[in-house]
Image (tube, rainbow, N blue to C red; front, side):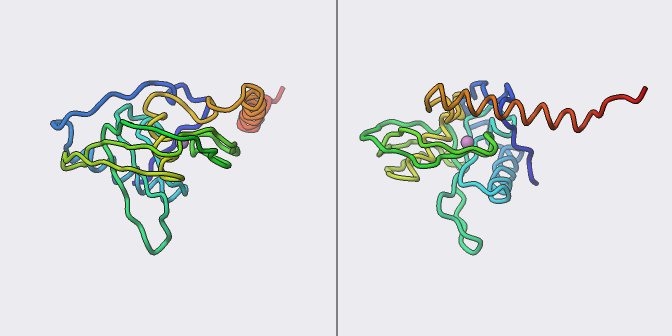
Length: 180
Ligand code: NI
């Protein structure tokens, strides 16, 4: 099932997500994870965090190098960065919840991430580059942080103004002036 992805400035993107426990892993959660994956591929994107679909649980899905014919969906619970090092400029980072925008973001070059699988096995990833950036980006979502929080205030303000103007225009189109 495809889910609606919340868009900035929806306040729900700012809420912190809660850790899951082993007992929380049921069919409903599995179904949610599959739907998040389907939504991510459909949008299309390379990662999606549960709060982006309005569910404030520490669950993310990722597939950084998928193609139409090759998909390998990673579903991760309670992901946590346990080590980070180096500096990396993430070029033109973007987000399904931040429409019509991309920007360069300072990120860590290498991260080690620990998480649980749906079968509640502990898994660890030691990664660099795009994969490391994706982890940082998705885990930020779980803490209510968007990548535009990590760019200069000037750039962010410009985007926020442009986005609000667009939303106002959309609203006006939806609500034409009443006839008199
Ligand atoms: Ni995002």
